[in-house]
Image 1: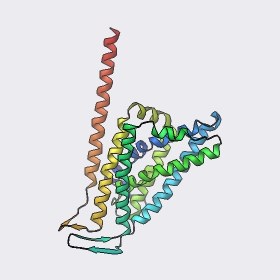
Image 2: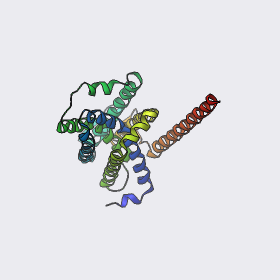
Image 3: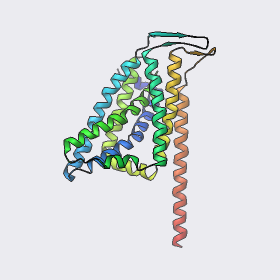
Length: 271
């Protein structure tokens, strides 16, 4: 069942996906904190932990549902025109809609974070939450909204990995479980780190744009789409992993440089 974990590609996908799940879950942590802070102090930690546990269960159920839909590979409709030929399947539709959603979600989130950074907090702060059960329900609803892009990201990162249909599902479930556990244990330090380095979250949202395009290309490839006589090919996931790794390396070097400059300026000011 876990033979997929003997593959190097699977471990690379798992580590990359876990990182993205954590970074993309920062908004979720911020929202959960805002909801929990409206409760009495003795209930705040309980609301956070129960909210994240239910979020994990909810995401695993969604993974099963989406994985089933992605498994519908047989075309149920064929398009044959002078410029487009393809076989439409359930798998292609889910991947196409998922790719379009990620493009919309990532660009709109980047716009909100750059242009109106207080938007999300203002929406939640306007809601009055005093009971633990009401807070947990609110957290689960919030997570459902945020889990859509998380699930689609997982599908995009693992689709086609392994020889068995369950291989990708196992990787996605492990990544979700690890990311939720890490968020439960290190929710506050992670939030502080991202608030201190907001470019990390913008970087993750930029990765969603890449994954969105990859899902669209994958949908066309699996449908054997031929546009103006040219067959659409799949984008190798190695390119995506390299782009993510290279971007993160540049960002960490940039953070280190900023820290060094700040230390140098403090020394000069003290002199």
